[in-house]
Image (tube, rainbow, N blue to C red; front, side):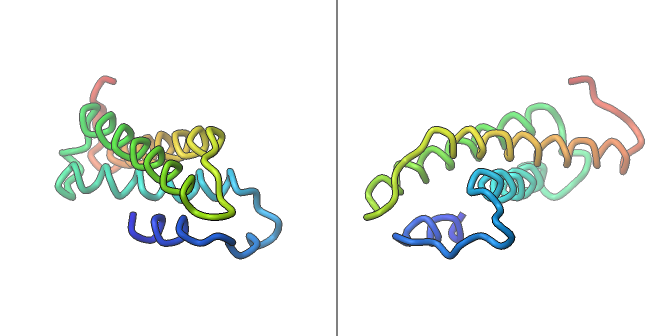
Length: 113
């Protein structure tokens, strides 16, 4: 979250490698944040990965994405963009579901969603 905040504070960001779109970068970064959020809320255990943990992690990650866009609205040369929030949401959901699927593989059982 600190890294996201710091990069959001820059008026100009370096050009993405290979022409990667800004929305893709948002999705990847918030996907990683979603993964970390699930693991933190699950106390670092696979048994703690459940629907409540996933929903909470996604909500917190998306909320942070919204606050980050609000923060960017005060940075010269930056704007708040709903498309970024949508990409953040897709990334957060993808990251959370990835951890959930991995927990199924790791535990060998499935909690009904």
